[in-house]
Amino acid sequence: MSDALLNLINGDIEAASTLLQLIDDEYQALQSRDLDALQKLLDSKLPLLQQLEQNGRIRTQALQQAGLSADRAGLAQIAQATGNAELSARAEALTALLARCQDANQRNGRIIRSGQASTERTLDILRGQDTPRLYDRYGGSTQGTRQRPLSQA
Image (cartoon, rainbow, N blue to C red; front, side, top):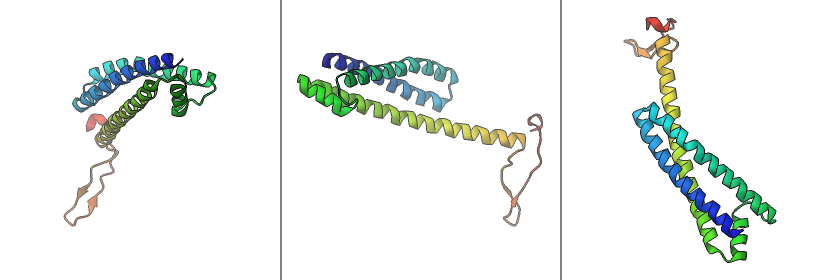
């Protein structure tokens, strides 16, 4: 069983490495606002995410069937019982790689949310729903609350 788990973890390390590269490519595409590249990257990421999820479920089931907890402690018990120290080391490497993927994905999410907020603000200004703050000669802000259609902006 430890060899099967090791094969799953090694497959996940390969998938997570590819996923990390795609997330970094996504970052570049977000910076250049290349929507076609973003769509292709999303299409490439989905199978990798599905593979990681499926292999995680298989590992969990294998550990639970062996009567162990489905976490690091369970993997450590299997590694110790079978004398397979590589299993624990590879599991730690996978954990670190997935943490890097999560951090990079959160970075990309912040960029996406920032872009959405900027676009929403621009559209509100164009529609006349939110005017930019202007100041009069006394330092007070002026309020232009007139609504206008987008075609007249």
